[in-house]
Amino acid sequence: MMSLFYTIVPLCAIGLVAAIVLYFVSQKFKVEEDPRIDDVEKMLPGANCGGCGFPGCRGLATALVEQEDISSLYCSVGGGDCMKAIADYLGKAAPVKEPQVATVRCGGTCEKRPRTSTYAGTKSCAIASSVYKGETDCAYGCLGYGDCVEACAFDAIHINPETGLAEVDADKCTACGACVSACPKGVIELRKKWPKNRAIYVSCVSKDKGPVTMKACKAGCIGCSKCLKVCEFGAITIENNLAFIDSTKCRLCRKCVAECPTGAIKMVGLAPLPPKEKPETKEN
Image 1: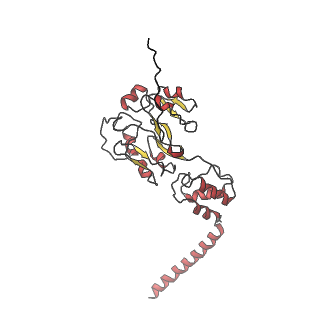
Image 2 (image 1 turned 90 degrees about the vertical axis):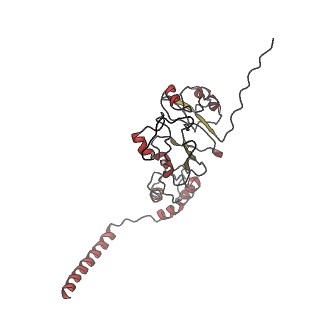
Image 3 (image 1 turned 180 degrees about the horizontal axis):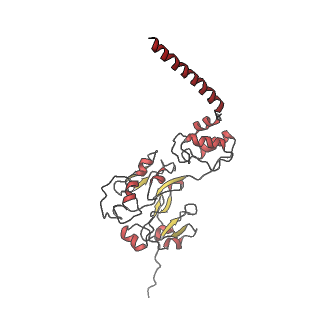
């Protein structure tokens, strides 16, 4: 019994001394944290999606409090109202950013992009793209295995079983960018969000030449420049056989949509332009 006592007492004494030392060390080297960080974190939506570039809302809250200029910081989930409330609380100028929405730039449906092979591996876009170009002859299009769906914390993106393509619910999308990062093909991008979810964009990312693109997908951009010629606002550029519409310059005039021979330019929330009237021919 005494031997047990002599064993326990020294251990307790060592533990007590260690606790006292650790206490004084922690007091000496502790870092005082601004209490406003807790308040700002509570004002953020708490999604911890990483869309702001920080690992979570705590990281963004710390940056908002510590940085004098917060113009480069933005919470896409909370939006402008959230950032204005935080800026008012901190006595700083609120960052301003146009609302954005994730856009899937691929129109290669099962009908337009026929299957030429079968993939039997793990149903993951990241894994498949590293070893396989896809089940069609297009090496650029949406694989449809749903990595973007898993990455979205807001249930804003799903795979359409009929088309095999990812589709975004603009009303749910917060433009956090998680799906953009998850897509190994670079098919998804953040674009300007128009009122009433209107949009015009090139639904293709293929950089192949026209004949190659057409063979792989009937809905692909062939770089014909017809859209470029009719755009009056300088919103369209063509590089590497691919047209691109700058959403910050586009005025939704829809002329490019009517000119595209493959239907690669998609129009959302807008009515098509009326057909051109044929000039009347005079009868002799």
